[in-house]
Image 1 (spheres, rainbow, N blue to C red):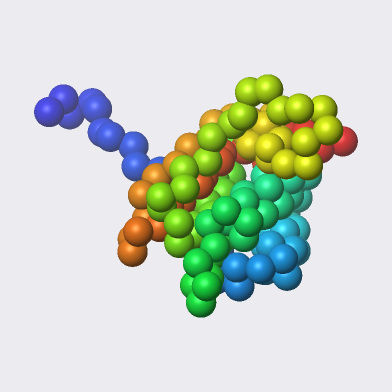
Image 2 (image 1 turned 90 degrees about the horizontal axis):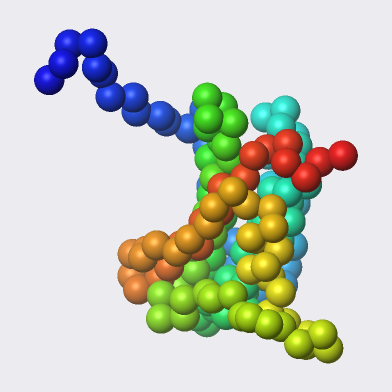
Length: 145
């Protein structure tokens, strides 16, 4: 190994996680927790609020298993100017996909398009107990006015 090269390991500067009921109230509380937590960290972000709202809504609508909660996790990497949002639900068998195109009068199908618009990147990872984690990374100030 080259003595001049040291691998850089980045750890979150700030970290927050909460379990929420897999219902509409839980989805609403996910956004409220995000607003409060990012405010406490001094990095309010409309982009993060929108992404959390969509991912939490998807967890409740498409990832719900009766009796199981979903998890919201926020990781702020100040050195990379990145906020990683993770929403873990119990339905690993339902992998989110963007629909192309969404009909103009459709009542659903736009959530991941909104995530794509705000996020630098997003994806899905397996989670324990047959669940999945949908994650997105946003710049904390992206989309703010």
